[in-house]
Structures are given as C-alpha cells and as structure tokens.
Length: 203
Ligand SMILES: [Ca+2]
Ligand SMILES: [Ca+2]
Image (cartoon, rainbow, N blue to C red; front, side, top):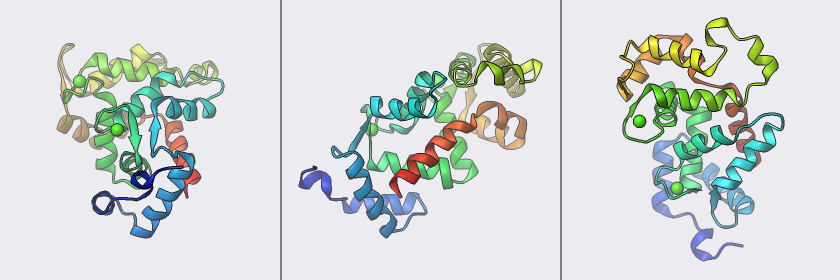
C-alpha cells in the first residue's frame, strides 16, 4: 500500500478542497481512505479511467469520450488524476452549481485547451458522444440532430458564429444558460451516471 507520503492528505489540499467544494473535512478524509484503497498509488491513470467507462458501456464505444472527460479533469495535464482532481471532478459533476458545470463543459469542449471553442472541437466531442448512443436510440433522435454533423451544425448555428469563428468561455456559458435546448444538445446523460457510480464506490 502507499508510503507515508501518499497516505496522508496534506493540509493544503484539504483546505483547498474545503474551499472549492461543499464537502466537509470528515467526508474528505473518509473519501481519501477509500480512494487509496481503490488506487494505492494515489493516482488514477487514463487507462483505469477508460476501463471504468468501458465497463458501463459494454455495447458502445466510450473510449474517445472517456479520453476527453479525463483531459477535462486532469487540471495539471500530467496524465493522471490525483485525489484533488478527482474530488473536484466529483463535485463538479454531481453537486456543483450550474455555472461550475458549464465551466467544466467548456473545458470538455475546448479540446486543445486554448481558451476558446471552434466548430471542429464541437464536432469532435459530439462524435464521441454519438459513439455511446446505440443505433436504436439514434433512430429516435429528431431529424435535425440525428448525426454528429447535424447536431454540430445545430449547436454552432445557435451561437451565431461564422464557420471559422470561436466561442469564448463567457459566450458559451451565457449561451447555454439562456437556452435549455443547447444544454440538452451539448451533454450526454450517461457519463453523469458514471460519475454517480464512481461516487458511490467511494462513499
Ligand atoms: Ca493530473
Ligand atoms: Ca480550443
């Protein structure tokens, strides 16, 4: 199991998490112990993260989407999720405020992390979402959003940008807050369920 360095939760991290989430010190301590039981190294690798997704989508191909979600949680881009990143992710996707969730959605769609979203980036994420929707369910989607291309066009048109334009974080958050249809188009509810499962596992 972990050595002394990985088995103690540092005061700094604890304080930061108490400030940035609504979790109590007791909750954080108890999650940390469980996190270490599941991940003795104190870090979740991209492969572990993807395999969790794969286990929830046995009939689909969640690989690409899982990669994007992982990137959006890996705040320091070191290729692993440490306890802090993991708790921030849980908080965002479960109990976070709408605006925080949209900040996270923006990070998910900003594939190259340059602070704005292009139409190509929307297409990339929407494609990965479609890989997780069964062919059967795809048939039930409205005509103007039943392919990744159509859905991308619909989202892009809503923001009123030129084909090669960019959406800033502020525009993205305000736009989605103003229009619930766009919220539905940019998200996929099953990853939410995965997050809840992850949370159950650590509670
Ligand atoms: Ca990291
Ligand atoms: Ca970008």
